[in-house]
Amino acid sequence: MDAASLSPDEHRALAGLTTDLTRVFGAGLEAVAAYGLHHPSPPPRPVHAIALVERLSFDDLARCAPLVTAWRRAGLAVPLILEREEFLRTLDVFPLEYGDIIAHHVLVAGRDFFAEARVAPEDVRRACELAAKSHLIHLREGFLEAGGEPRATARLIAASAAPLRALLANIARLAAGPGADVADTAERQIGIPAAVVREVLASGAGQDSSIAEPSALLGRYIDAAERMWEFVDTWQGRA
Image (cartoon, rainbow, N blue to C red; front, side, top):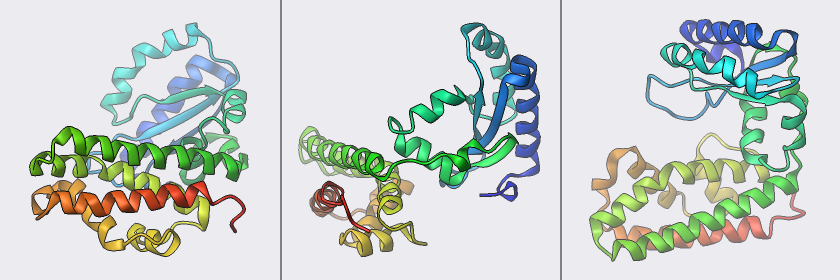
């Protein structure tokens, strides 16, 4: 992504953040970037930022704490502040989260360590498998907790829509790169019905009342979730 992804107000807010962090860390502030701008979010969206520093102490955090209110007022989420080496050494621990930052960041200040970083495909595969299996278990347990009641089942489906979108985006990045439409990409790459994906994502947009038969949809959804897990479980070595 490039700086055009940011509005003038967001540019000003991030410039103010950079000025504040420079006062705290001085030359130890090595990079500031915005991220998460590609995720669908109704306005006003909080702008997420990551700052890489040479060293991060509790005293540094204490100096940043009084600034948080002003950052939020400017439309910023509380920034993620990490030591540069800490970020690079934990790419294998948070491959999906950091991989998303690497793929979709906008550099605000400093050196672009994010563009230089690389996440190992096997680390992404392992994280996708964990996320896919957790998603499947959540759907199964949620249906039992709902007791088969249609409205509770519809709420379960709606609440799972955003995690499903994120999971499919990560699987797409692992497999062959995302397409223009997440549902079509899932059908092409994984073999799950695009119609099921679209219906679940629509429910997450506040349209759960349009689900005529929530239990029937959840049954198809769980079948698709099983296929997602099987796909990432056996992905190793695919091109």
